[in-house]
Figure 1: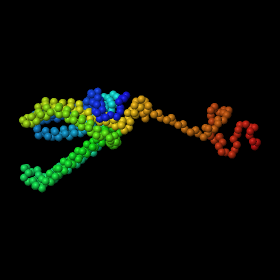
Figure 2: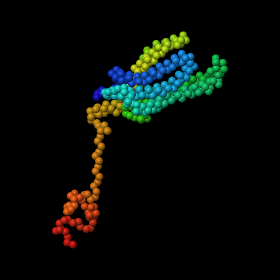
Figure 3: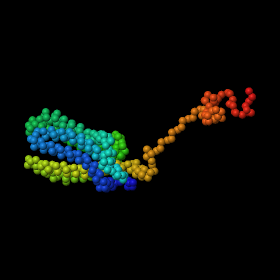
Figure 4: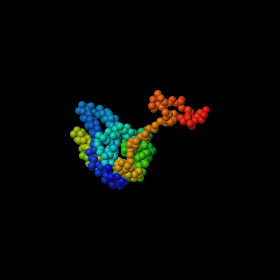
Length: 376
């Protein structure tokens, strides 16, 4: 039984995240590697097809191949990332309560409800990013509908009107200000919904209930969750920079000399990216799951509930015995005293119901003793 369930500070949650990650690295990295491996296969396939088209002198088809891969890979990224996130939350929930966790067991646990988790993430993403979608759509519609007719995008700006340039500058300034507001809004909403996936996975909640649950649980700790996100994001960006800087320099060098990036370098970049994503992918999900349990301990006394359940002091609902079936009420004549069995009648047989006098009849009931009967 896990005996360290107690309210933790941000530093203790970070320490606990690192401890769980080190002791269960194979499981967590393996869960992320399933998703990263699928992406690696698709990226290598895209590189191979592009190289084949170049050798066949079919470079005109490169754009269509790239678009086709984008159409395939975008939903695949969403599904794979969602499955990996839910499976990681499931594994962290197990190991945090000192239960065994495996890669196969984590995925087998979440796959039957994968549609629910993807729907939850879709709702959360829509609420978080809808201001950006509206803002960018409106800005580009303005550029197309106002900028082009007024010559703002003509070569050299020869046909540009001074008033149109001023209007464009003001609209762009407003776009930047609203963009900052949309960014702050996105952060606040992301913090509100940060515990929704752990709540849905652990408590088997529907998408909308999990979102409401996250809003309630995250109250009072959204600042700490924000700091956790900043720290882990800094770690992830640092690792990505270290592992990819060599390939970025090589690409810029090749572009400067109008040369192609060697095939072996492209393949190596994808392999390094696979290892990096498998390593850093589970970090944030691990920290959020620990925050989920910490908030339940603070608000609901989950530590006491868990210790009582582990000690056998509370029985799960499925262990409560069903009540015994109630016997049917006896028939009216079955409560009447059994008369002596007449000769020729089988032992234990009761007289027919019609032979029993009514309960409120005016006729006297024979007592069986002639001395007590009134003379007729």
